[in-house]
Length: 472
Image 1: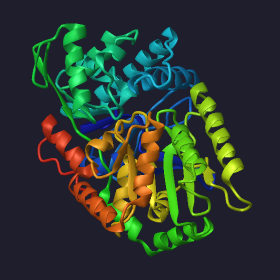
Image 2: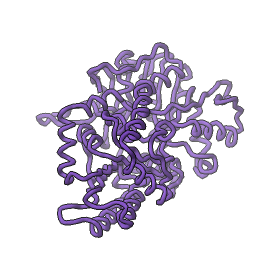
Image 3: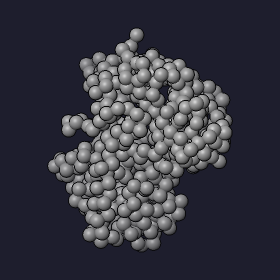
């Protein structure tokens, strides 16, 4: 029997990466905002993190790493295909992102989703001590709260959705909509990135299940389920430290030199996902070059597109479209040794990304829909000199906090072009003023504050999720 914990995190992935050292399997912490935020709470309470370790087949035995108990959950190759690539990423993901791509509905995917959620719920029931707090994360595990409550009514259960939550009209398309909603209502507190998402959820409970609500509290089976907005953030101090590192500063200068020392470096950093608006951003840049409002080599664009879900058909199609658009722009406007767009379909370290942020005059974050978008916040945190401009989609959660960005509607090409031109042409003093206001906000609203606020609302006593100086 596994040692029990008073604080348990349940997420699709474990916060560890597998590495082979001298032919032997070892584990190291994986970088990520969620891990950074929750590490102090987990370490302080000798907590357990339940999740999938990667790969298919049998899960490794539970182990401990840096004061956190790690409890791996197995997934078979078929479950990965049906629960993860299918139900989670071809059904729920597009539906919750305003059906930017058409969701696919398959019965066998739903069955796999139920089965895997049951397995995660059982793991949490096994490791949680009497009266423990369990915090379930994200859209892959929406059935877990209700399943867990049935097994362990003594637990305090929180759920946080990292992606948008759709309006009633869209959610109603979901074939097992009532089951998903009941799954979420198993929690004591359901957290969202935006106030509007929390309101969608509360109204949906009334519309679909006829449940009464008052303010943001829903009456369910004689209990109160609270819904609320808890916008996630970054480890601001860590990003600021990294950007100030002399090695990162030197790399930023080197990047600009490698790009031919242009007047304006425009940067995009995204997962290669159809919600991110990469293709529309490239088209806006192409039209500005065609209109003569931007010129190569004075202005160049760098687009980092991290590989993502490459076995899902929507993503394969998107990659072809983006690469075709990059080829077209470079064919029409590039010069020998001077491409207009530097397209990088690969993953980068946090240090290299920080150097890119420091090197970029304009950051374009133009998703069609995004729960938050932490790249926008990372860019702002890295601009210690107060310069730089953020062009930001109104449909990113970050837009409600970073009001001093150059906001645009990514569905409107002229609006995107206008925002980009205003960002490129803005006076340095104005850019510094805008950046200072956004940086002040991020210093007081960092990822540790996000975790503390949620857990305090859930009723976890004396939560101090402030990372120690040597963490992250």
